[in-house]
Amino acid sequence: MAKKFNVTVNGTTYEVEVEEVKAAGAAVPKAAPKAAPVAAPAPKAAAPAPVAKATAGAGEHSIDAPMPGKIVKLVAAEGASVNAGDVLLILEAMKMQNEITADAAGTVKKFNVAAGQSVKAHESLVILG
Image (tube, rainbow, N blue to C red; front, side, top):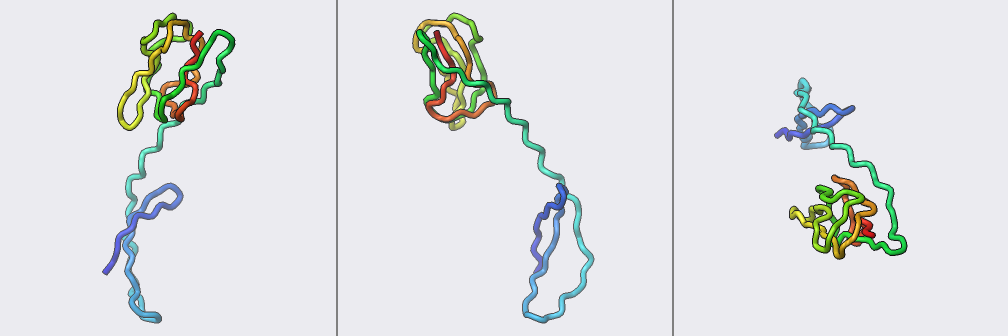
């Protein structure tokens, strides 16, 4: 019985049938190849360019990621004044969107992330001053 496999050669995917040989030295019947091109998977979207990380200076502090995830949207803008509880950005983790908020009133000095970027737990997201 023949088994079907997908084989990729130089970026083109082919569906092929392979027949198992039962005994060593047994004659293998010659068969015409039944290779047909299969649609290749869509290329992955390019990852966002990394953002230069800033550290908190005097009178500033960092808002860190509470868990690993992906940045969906930056809500606040750099230079904006925010109050405690204002949403700064949206972090998606485990298919849930989490609002990352300011822990104190201040000014958004610098975002250390961009939309679409993956982050690790405890990674600095925003510098507030």
